[in-house]
Image 1: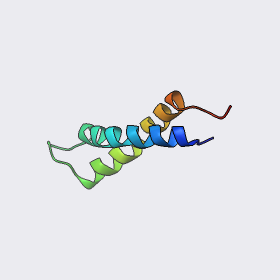
Image 2: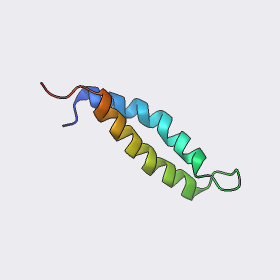
Image 3: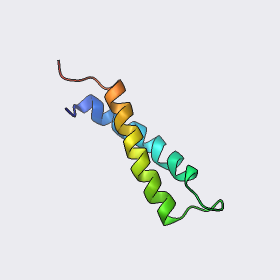
Image 4: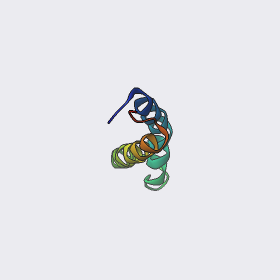
Length: 59
């Protein structure tokens, strides 16, 4: 379940993960639309895992 705590952790993790993952997928040192799209997708998956691990679930 997505609690407020997990939503906050997701937002914080996504802010850092999306640009970082976009940097991994850049082509010839340039950010392309494909690199940004892949960064957003993989950054969101990293943020979800981080939010589940760090956020508080329902009691």
